[in-house]
Length: 348
Image (cartoon, rainbow, N blue to C red; front, side, top):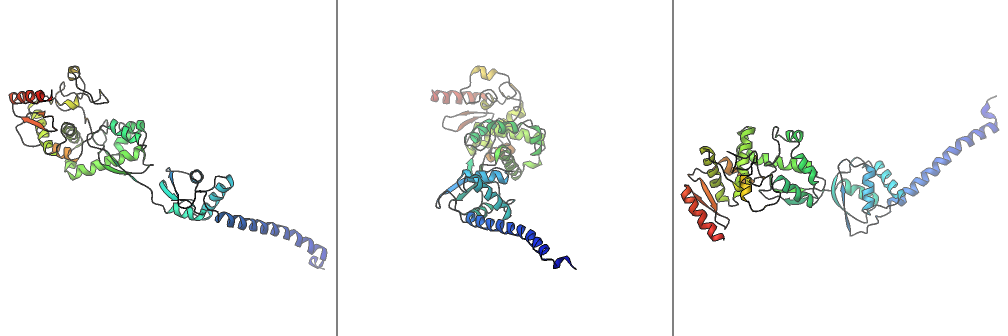
C-alpha cells in the first residue's frame, strides 16, 4: 500500500509546504506595498526649486545617497535612504551615477531622480587667470574661490614625479608653464586637474607658435625670457621690442637689469624696489647675475611667448617707463639717461 494513500501523512506534508509559500506571499505583498508607496513619494524639496549637489570622484552609492538626502532631494530618514539605495541597485543605475557638480530639480519621485542624475550634465564655471601671474598668485586666486587647495596646488608645481608625468621632466618647477587663460572648471576638478589643464594648454599654444622644435633647455630659456617680457610691458606692440632689447644684451654679455626679477622669490606682494634689493644676490636678480634668471618669474601668455621666440631685430639696448604704460627705447646709454631724467622728473 502506498504511503501517499494515507490521508494523515498527505495533509501534514501539505501543511509543511504551505507555510513557506505563505511567508513568501506575505513578503512579496509587503515589497509591493513598500515599493509602490516609496516610488510615489516626492522629494522633500518642493517642485519648482533646485538643489546643487557636488559628487566627488570615487563616491560610493551610500555616499551619493547621503549627499542627495542632505540636499533634500530624497528623504532624510534611514528607511528612505536605504530604500533609495536598494532602488538604485534594482534599477541598475547604481554604477551609472556620475561625479561632478549638478543642479537637480526638487519634487521628483525617486526613480525620476535616479534617471535625472544618471543623465545630468555637470555644471562648469568660467574662470580667467590673467597673464603674468606667478604660480603662488594663481594658487591664491584659485583657492580663494574654492577651486582647489592652495598648498596642494603649490606642492604639485614642484613635485618631480608629477612634473615628469605632464611632460616637463627635468624642470624644477612648473612656473612659466601654467598657461594663463579662461578655463571652464568643475568644483571637482581639483589642483591636479587644474594644473594638467594649464600645462596642456601651454603645450598647445607652444606648438602653434612653432616652439615644439626646441629642446627642453632652449624651451626653458625662451619661456624665462617670455616671463620677463610679460612683466615688463602690457602693450602688444612693445613686446617684440622688449624681447629684442634683452636678446641684444644677452648677445653682448650685458646684465639684463630687469626690475621684475629683483623681487621674485623675495617678496610675495609687489612693493617698491630698494637699493638693497638691487644688490641682493639671488638666482633671479638680473642686476647681480649674468644672463637670464634661473627660471621663469611668471607665467606668460601667447603674445609674450611669441615675442620671445621671435624678438624684434633692433639696435635698442635700453628702455624706460614713460608712466603712461608705454616705454621709451634707446640705443645708447647717453640717450637712455636723458630719457630716465625726462620721465622720472615727470613722475615726481
